[in-house]
Structure formats: C-alpha cells, structure tokens
Image (cartoon, rainbow, N blue to C red; front, side, top):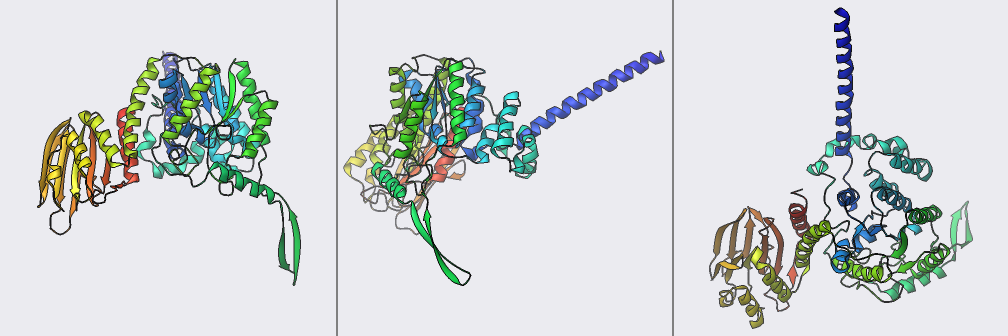
Length: 550
C-alpha cells in the first residue's frame, strides 16, 4: 500500500516537473517573441517573411529576392492582375546574398517555383549586422537557422561580441532590455495574409535631381581621380607624399559571389530558372556608394555570362521604364508605387514572353487583389495635387464615403466657372454663391448632399455618420481669426490654411482616408498636405481593411 502511494507520488512529481518545464518553455518563447523587434523600421520585413506561409496551398511561379529596391519596386499584385503570374516578394533591407540563399532554401521547403528572380545590388557591398538580423530574428528555431546563424556568427562578423551564435538562436539574450519600450505593436500577430504579397507601397513623390547622363558623368570623374598627394607637417618639417589609389571601388563582394553560385546550384537542384535583374536607382555615386553605374552593369554582365545566367538591367539595359520625376519616393534611392507598377508591367511581359512563368488563377490571389486595389486607390487619391483631378477622383468614390468640405479664410478669389462646374457634378450648388471671404460648409454622404451652407457669418454643423460623429465649422466673413475646422470623433483633420479644406471618411473601414487643402484663393490652387498625417491615415486604413484592426 505504501509502495503504491510512493509510486503515485513519484509519478505526480515527474508530471509536475514536465508541466513546469512545458509552461516555462511556452512562457519563455512568448516573452522572447514579444521582446524581439518587429522591425517595422525595416519596412515590415517581419510580415513579409511570415506572410509567405499564408500561401502554402498556392502554386507559386516566381519568387523575388534582393534588397529594399525590390520590395519597393516589384508588385506581385500587379503581376497577377495583368499577367496572371503567381509571385511573392521576399526582399529585405540590404539583403545579403547569403540571406537570399537561406530564404530561398527555406522557401523550397514548401514551394517549387518555376523562376527565382534576384536583384544583384547586394553583390557590390557588405551589409551590416542588422541586415542579417532582419532575416535571422524572423526565422523559426530550426536546423536551417542554426546553419545560417553559425555562418553569420563565426565567419562574417567574428569580432561582434553582441552577435554570437547563442544570441541569434535565442534573441532574448540581445533584446532582454527592451522590456522598457514594449508597445502595442510588439503583440501584433506575425502570421496571416499579407495583402501585397511582399511589396511595400509608398505614394510619396520626391523627384531625383539627377539623370542617367549625370550618373555616367559623375562616375567618369570618379574613375579619373586615382592619384593625388598629401602634405603633412610633423617633426618640425613639411613632407609631401604622392598617393596613387582609386577612390571608386566597384569590386564584387567575393563571399556574395560564392553565395550567388550556391543560389544557382540550389535552383538547378529544384528545376527552377534563375534570372538576375537590377531595379533602377538614381543617385550619384559620390553620395550613395551603392549607386548602380555602367561600370557595375558591365561587371555584372561578365559575371552573368561566366555563370551562364540571364541578366536584365532595367536601368542601363536599353529603354527607360520609369521616370525619376514622378516614380521615386526619396530622390532616386527607391521607387514609389507608381514606379513599381511600371517595373512590374515590364517584368510581367518579359516573364511570360520568355516562358519564366505561366498565366494562372488563384482564389487566394483574387482575395488579396481586391484589398490591394482598394489600398492602391486610397493611396493614389492621397497623392493627387491637382484640384480638377482630385474632384474627378471624388466623383468616382462618393457613393462609398463622406466628403466634408469647409472654407478657410477666402476660398472664392481663385475659383473659375470650370471649378464650379466640377463641384456641381458632385452635387454642390451653393458653393458658387459665395463671395469674397464668405464661410462655406458642404457634406456629401453616400453620394447625396447631406448639408450645404454659405454665409458671411460663421457656419457650424454636426452630424452622425456610421461609426463617427463629425463637427464642422467655417469661420470667415469679416470676423477675426478666419479658419476652418473638421473634426471626426473629436480629432481635428482640417489643415485650416486658406482655400477649401477637404476630408474624406471611408464607410467600409470607418476611417478617415484623406485630408487636403487646396488654396482656391490662388488661381494655381496648389495643395497642402501633412504627410505625417497622410501616413497615419494610410496605416489606419490598411490596418482596418487588411489586418483585422492591427
């Protein structure tokens, strides 16, 4: 009897130990996941890496790998909509070629694409440690991660004591002190649908001041500068020394070249074709060492020929595909979504014509495409700075939103009959009755005019919308402090400069999607936007539409 009780106690003790270890392990892994950075500052690479798991039942045809130029410059949704190509963008910031190799190896565990497309930028520079961590910190605990971490810790960065093998396999060792900076976003789910399938959209437009000719000229100047001298005063005398050294290094990273060969062999093992490309960038090499130049293009062409790989240079390869006046978000370093659309159109035609992919249909892609088109449409609206074009866009979407307009200071002086004709097409008939410095408020909801008023005194209006309460005022006339106010759920969205403030409220997501002021006092009707606010509006809309409120 006593022996039976003793055996039972032992079993209970063993069970408690097992439960203790199990619960401790679960807590450990969850705390580690919370403390490990989501790398949102690294352009959402966490969602990009984990998002591919959502497509497990999809027969992917094309995988894109490379640096930020790729996830800014290639749109899988555009490729699908126009060409029926099922692709995914697995690029990460300054992605090491070794990182491309390990991501491709991980991808082959679930998929078998016909074509792997690799941007060659990373062949010409040595990425910093954080560029590796963007990938390593987002890989699940596995033998593949161990192999990659060992390469990183022991060979690539042997002198970095904070990035040893143990801290890579258990990121909490490096990030344990981040508990003081935990935010809501640390608890964001990492899996699920990624509606762009890897692309990161930007509607910003910051033109490059340079041209292809400038890049060629500046590169030639660097090439010529390979000798000089230095004068030094030391030991009570002045000495002059001749220096003979090129200031422009275009040599290929040898380790990256090794991994390019590994990627080629990996593709051959799985029956995939490997296509090398270069997404256009437009910066002069003096200020941006990773600038793509004709010299690098020529060197890459030789490497591609030696490896018997096709190479498609989308910058120096012939016709101009994008305009760096309208298609770049940061003066030439990365493309915006309009440039990405052009690149994707060109690539889609090339991939089909050269049998790198086939037309297919996918319910999963159809679902993502529906969301992508809605997001693209909103971000496109936010980028419009022409008054007539903007009103035309509002006519297209007025059935699904509330359009709120308020006059600020004077909205009349720069208006023309054509302007009023456009506004009448929206349903606004009183706005043309305004005189110099009159107040004005107009509200169109679901395609119908909810309220419109013009006065030489202050106008105030309140209304209840689906999911929101709006408060509007236009205080102009001859009173002091002329201004406008448009509040949605007590948050102020009006720019309140001079002209017409316009705020758009989306009914589907119950979010404000745009806020802009057109200076209709000036005949040019230039627009004023708060781009920090526009980014917040875009993120809130995307989060509600695509990520269940995250």
